[in-house]
Structures are given as structure tokens and as C-alpha cells.
Length: 119
Image (cartoon, rainbow, N blue to C red):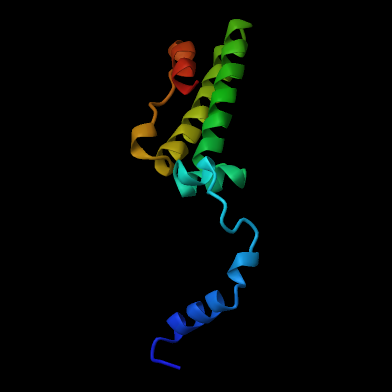
């Protein structure tokens, strides 16, 4: 055995023709494997949703419910409390999301415009 023990193992493995028995040996790689980012593909295949995206979806859903509540003519105190709760979640969202994705806090008189930003 030489000083290159890993090279010896690889060459012995090739001499035994064990590599020819592997599934997919000699076949071309699919275009899915060759294109795109490996990390993005792995995360997508694992159905992983980052916390900031899940929080983004929750805020969007709360804003749409708040818009319906506002159109129903609910008391403004209730709307102000909901807006404050949403703003607390937006603060948390802004601390964990990438900087270009940060959003402004919500104001009660511009809920529909804010909802369009979250869609």
C-alpha cells in the first residue's frame, strides 16, 4: 500500500467493477440536478418554511381579516388594538427577515394599502 491510501481504495474499487453495479451508473444526470441552487431545491423538497415567511403569511391573513372588520363598521378601539398587535408582529418580522424584505408598521387609516404591500 502506498502513502495515498484514499487513492488506493478508489482504484481498488474501480478494479472490482463494483461501481458499474450502482443504480444510475453511466446515465446522464437529469436537468433538475444540474440547474438551480442546491440549497433552495433541498429546502423546497423538504417542505421547510422559514419562520419569517410563516410570520409574513400570518400578518397578511390578519390584515385581510382586519380590513373586513373595518368595513363591517366595528368600533375603532377594537381596530386600534388589532393594529397594535399586528405592529408587534411586524417588529418581530423585521428582526428575523432579510433587510430588503422589511416592512413599515400599519396605520389604521391605510390598512388596504398595507395589505397590498403584504400580498
